[in-house]
Length: 417
Image (tube, rainbow, N blue to C red; front, side, top):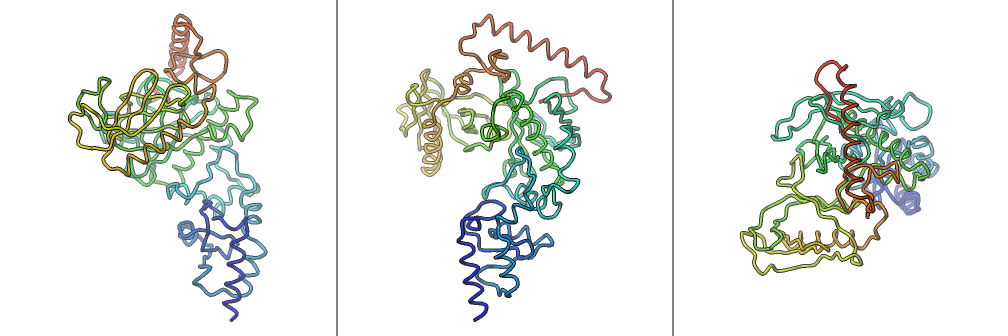
């Protein structure tokens, strides 16, 4: 009878708004609880808690003593957050239920094991607070599948992420980082993306330590946050935090034909970057550089997406068609299955339905240089080609000046992203 009474109390507690989602990833209807910390968690996060010193029980299946139930009543998710998440920096990524395991694992360990965010310990790591981090990461070769060790250096002061390999220079203005464990084939796999001479460039890296790769990820986010605060000095955290890094809305293979729609279909890897309204395509999923990019505007600006059956299809193995129409041309793709077709249609329509921002209008073209109307690098639609040429020369000069500084460095030259 006591156990049934306690179970009923717990089920009532977990219905309360503050306890109705997992304390660590936000998954709905948590069925587990850490009775040492006093939080309600989902099944996936409960497995991580088991590996710590915290103890977990099933709300429905395990026996609960009176004192443990009283502790859960007096604590709960909201009170626990006030202690363990007291000083979480705005740039630190808070994982969601669909994020990869390494992010959830290190978030839980950072909160409850290392006590990084209670405002009283040596944590968070110096990389977050000093704006500088360096170390070794395994990096995939640009033209092969081999991973080699490379030294990476992150500098918030210069807004750069560098690796010792070859001479080049990129900055934080358009850098993105997202975990891609399945695509990279390593549970700690991280994809870093940036713009390189009007091309989207991908780096694929990992570290054997889950803690270290998440430190790298959040250090990059810290530097990006500092950059955005400089680029948009009046921007609020509510506006800037979603811009720090982003996960891509959808990725996968589709077949693509050419502009005449009579060319042979070729299999391509597609990435939908919804924040930048871009559909990028590559020959293979781990390619370093894109083959092309399609800007996705709104219906009022002449963009649309729909199912289609190509009239002159040639060389395609797949039968489920999609047409993306822009003011310039029509793009026809083929999906392997109807389920994939519907998923692509849904996510593309989601981007189409979102109103365009001023940054979206400026991002419709490749960036030839810095638009002086903002400290953010972007294309100004009204700038003349002569103005853009001058800006390109200015950017080239900046690169040359930066590379002169690198001559004093020992070892290999720096390649900066």
